[in-house]
Image (cartoon, rainbow, N blue to C red):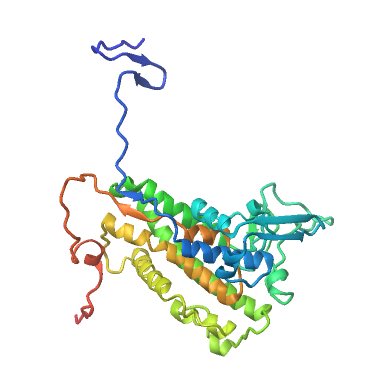
Length: 371
């Protein structure tokens, strides 16, 4: 039998697993060095998004100005089962909803759904084990056809014949992961100071990788669409486009103009932020230079550039005549964050240009090894 220690002022309850202190003061909450500012998304962006979504959903070609002049958006449409649906709301209602919710839900306004070849990723899985064919000489295949957006001549037919999964697009999962990781880095920012398994740093690496991957992936999806089932007016010249592997992403971004005939000339600010995040991603992946340093203020700067990835994806899709997805709307409307020091009374000076991430960037002329 365990003896109960006699400690004045503290009552302890012993169990088989834990020792509970009833009068123990609660542990103070961890200080959050990265906090959301509460700043709403720019109303200009929300209006452009709303007009774009309405145009794809209702098959219009209206400007923001024209939508704002309408007292109400009123129309009817039939679904594939010939059921009639009525639409009746103000343009600014949808603008406010996107701004407040930082997301997109067209069903809330009774709008018809729309899709994109970029997002249309079916997912099949088999966790029950293989099933024999009737002649019992093999296993049945669970196949995922890709003909809807890539045509009948696409040579790959993904399938599984036993436990496994098969999917045709990672756009939605990656978009969701960007939003999730952005929130996780904010909410768990106190873990940045712990070594251990470096999970917070891994989440930062993953966020930057996802931002690069989804831009690169979108370009490859455009390439395959243009090759196997192009839209009207698209051009596919393999010599002009060049090889897919081993190319700089800045060269692959030229595919947009080379295929669609539309310049990505309205995304200079977004491309600037993309290049900043890409360079940090490359550094964290290759550790070249062979060290890493950053302040939490550096991270805040990076997190506030993630919205530009959503805007870049939106503008890339605009050149392809493809709609923004719910995930892209959520990336564009990510909250602005700020650094909040633990000691608010300590006078702070601007960060040195020889400290933090600036201290681990190669000088303009990297020293050459001469032996």
